[in-house]
Length: 108
Length: 121
Image (cartoon, rainbow over all chains, first blue to last red):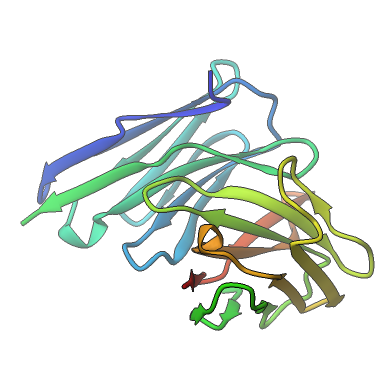
């Protein structure tokens, strides 16, 4: 069993749809990150969470420490949101463990 | 926001040669940088943790003599792929850790470089 799992693996949505990507982990963590990787490979850190909820523009990230689960929501999705979204947890040694990623395609 | 650069962005080299990839934190000092490798359609895998002024810590299965890491200053870490082979062809990404304060607690934000695509022929 992988330490970090994501669902779904692939997701196709129509422009404007509300999107949810889930992440569950099995290890103790000091923080959880949501990363966005565009087709060119560049990675942007979207959120760093250790509790609760964060919002940035159309993106919302939540984490439930007790259930070891986090979700990334995208409201009013747009084709430019098409990317791979990666959940990464940081253990107490400050090392990252990465999820397999969710490939999102938003169609116009 | 904080910026991390990598150079080169892509490189093609012949089998048996060595390639150096640079990772720089442009507007902050990073005592710790990380190197990752990503094969096509796979997630990132941590290769090593680079600490300024000390030896890098390598993940299990990563050959330290093949992937030489030098973190000579607080803004620069280099990864040298020695005697490269076609199976080393991959996307190499670095990240730099920037400590900060939020709500009275120390936080460690990660900033990723744009990556370097290495092709070994």
